[in-house]
Image (tube, rainbow, N blue to C red):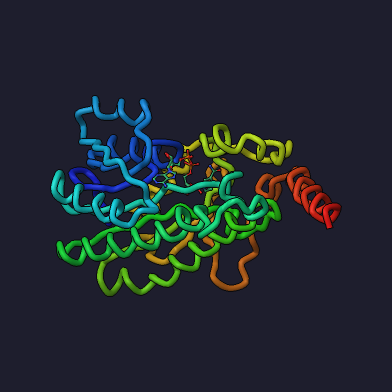
Length: 284
Ligand SMILES: NC(=O)c1ccc[n+]([C@@H]2O[C@H](COP(=O)([O-])OP(=O)(O)OC[C@H]3O[C@@H](n4cnc5c(N)ncnc54)[C@H](O)[C@@H]3O)[C@@H](O)[C@H]2O)c1
């Protein structure tokens, strides 16, 4: 039987924008109260507080700060109860300030902290909450088609999503053992501020055959994978637009099908990498 989310509780990190925001909206429309943990509280997210169907609360949270991430769970439990669904949606697209090639960071990569360490820690915190409350739960991760393909200009991003795919698969036995379902969806190109606000230069990698997906479509697929028992824990579901979904297999996976999922014009961005290397060579 499908999980009923009416009256349930969710935590969505990165829930102020893009896919996370669309997921918060969808959960609220189904009667699920949500706590958003994000560094920003956008007007679109704030507007959800006027909808009385279910609560939407905001807790300012930098997901790279583990105390703040832990406080997000404590806040949720105190204000509305132990979560049933945890979605660590906050993520960055290896922007210029945390990019392998720019090499501007001195201690560690924010892209890794946000895209890897945060979903890992959030999973641990979620499992601890579910166990303590003796209730079933779902942890729903945002991977990417980038976890299967590679792009020279954003090698860390692709690797972080590949990490998530394998991390999620490690929990495939947890659902039968403890009724805790850990899943991921791996979308293609989703039209969100991730592209249009911070990483506009990446738009030149979008080819004519590439396909934009709306965040609402991804939120619906994410929701279905969470609630439908046909999707088992440990599953990674690719979502490549126009309703196409596919399970990403652990062995011998054929990769994303067809045109539209490969970043048709990515060679433009790869050229920037080779130009940079040329400049470094000329300084030798
Ligand atoms: N947009 C795409 O094409 C696409 C495709 C595949 C996967 N994804 C993944 O989906 C997830 C959501 O992406 P999106 O497109 O909705 O992006 P988005 O930029 O619209 O939203 C990301 C949210 O994360 C928040 N965030 C960033 N750093 C944070 C931090 N340190 N602490 C707390 N919050 C922080 C931002 O404030 C923002 O509200 C990401 O994990 C992304 O990698 C996106």
